[in-house]
Amino acid sequence: MKVTVVGTGYVGLVTGACLSEMGNHVVCLDVDERKIRILNEGGIPIHEPGLEEIVRRNVAAGRLQFTTDIPSAVAHGTLQFIGVGTPPDEDGSADLQYVLAAARNIGRHMTDHKVIVDKSTVPVGTAAKVRDAVREVLAERGVDIEFSVVSNPEFLKEGAAVEDCMRPDRIVVGADDERAVLLMRALYTPFMRNHDRLLVMDLPSAEFTKYAANAMLATRISFMNELSRLAEKVGADIESVRKGIGSDPRIGTHFLYAGTGYGGSCFPKDVKALIHTGRENGMRLEVLEAVESVNDRQKLVLVDKIVARYGEDLAGRSFALWGLAFKPNTDDMREAPSRVIVEALLARGARVRAYDPVAMDEARRVMDGLQGIEFVTTQAEALAGADALVVVTEWKEFRNPDFDGIKAALKQPVIFDGRNLYDPAYMKSLGFEYRAIGRAGA
Image (cartoon, rainbow, N blue to C red; front, side, top):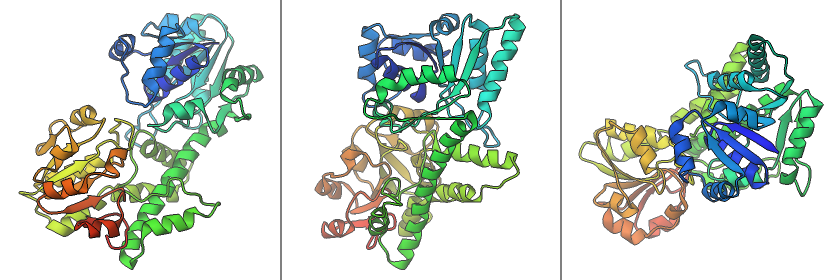
């Protein structure tokens, strides 16, 4: 099948690459000339495990192309996927300007039947706005060309997006056109060899499903984070609690880890957008307002522990910080807890030496201008002469480090663990002062 994907960020590039891997001829369009240049030169503008290999293989096979040429990209695909960004507006709503611009470009250049697929995370009612935008442009052109609009939200986890795309646990398709549904089913059948995972529903329900899923996961995280603070006060161990409740099949184990709060491009933005949608419809989504509030508070929990240990004035103190990206296996710094933690430490006069396996360049970009932070190239370099180690992101290489080396490098053997990577009893046996999240004895 011939497919055009508008946007080469996490959603667009992963979608386009995986569709080409299944034998489709895919053209990825972006107005950002820098991104397209990088891709055409064999590079990848984002970090996502496994993506580079798929892109190179399908470019070499002639199934995947990248362009800034809007007319040729629109002419190419019967299926036109829109995978552009929907950043939060000042009021928390999703900014649809890029989605609607892409829709208008399709309407401006289409000459035959198109199925326009909203892949971006968009609020309920966006499909109708996309349809209106295309109709307006077609009317301006004085032509009557048949087209359909489909909602096909993505459910990709950064750091595992390729795996999620190639082996989806569900494929949601919102449509009111049987012809469009048949085309979408044909496109996705190769991804569903074992059993049918395609869920067909109306357009508003498909759009709502994406927000509901992310809001539920964000709620689980904030729930555990709030309980972790209470666990510390009553002497309970949140890890034991997690195992206890996670063994209940009605609850399960996923997204029950206490930590420093959620970040990234999806959960913060989508929770805000759903809250905004509620307000537009005369409702307060009180649970989600609490989820957001708890998350904002949780990003400072490590700072609170550091202040409790050293005092409000951290002048003259130096901290090694491991992990900058909002989660492992990505270089994404959007809404990352590390940004809040670093700024709070610097504001109290501390110095920070930070290390991340992947996100160093992106961290330098988003933290440009901050005084008192140094970006280093190894874990050991961050540790040298620091007052304490602060672990923020749960990269695998941090899970079983050289504790003797850590102890020797630090001024004092103190670790603030924002991801509960280590066992408190074991750390105590090694002679560490260990402060974690909601852990008994820590």
